[in-house]
Length: 348
Image (tube, rainbow, N blue to C red; front, side, top):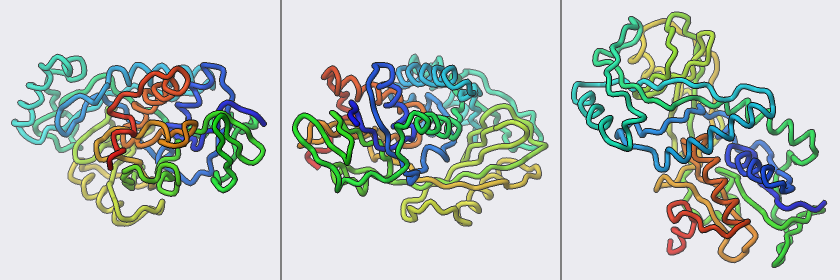
């Protein structure tokens, strides 16, 4: 088999890059053994504002435009619903936070995303005496549905291999790469947490962060917005909500834990005071980076091997943006932005 690209990984990063290849009529195969679960258990929120500090997300405008176009195209192609438009309400903890919000909402780079009004809380089951600030241009991508449908489509086409990629079978030459019976021009690793076992890129400073989420059933809560406080509550419809998320840096298994569950429940009970039932719990490992920028670029020795990684907690927004950057770098020699290029870690 002869293809233009081999892609390792079929999460948000891998899917985003595959979409670039499809647009440009490039041939490819994908390897994904389901060992990385950060995409399939993600909350899927897209939000242009860092709500801890009331600052804009890096390149948020460009990211949103590229990402939302991609998800819209996928909805059309597969006849599915992926993009659920929903506002985010940030709970204010004090009058000082209200004032900080007003100051931020006046800034030119934030005014289109932050409402300048304080929304009063009229829900008896939510503890929010200082009200909420509304973030606009927000929503939720149904990442699990996307991953499931996309993989199913690749399988039907015979271009998804649900097995681990074993570099022992890799033969790298100057102008092409051979892997078993597959010959390709380029190899792209979009392997998430799997980068730590990747001999080509395991030197990069990816910081794996385990996250756990709960799904609850709360028939009396009745909110139609994402509620953000110490945790977030994301409505799924029919009185179901996602509750998340935890951060854990030592336990890097995909096993759910009572510790994470209790942490989320304790925070949830401080936020809402209605009855609810825990329906499910999931865990995944986020590929994060200390400088909060993705890991994108070319292997220093093997010029036809690349990485697309480190999407962190904002993968649904940033994944399509950096996938386009990498494609243009490989195919058209467009320079990568210095902030995402793995060359920034060469001295390290």
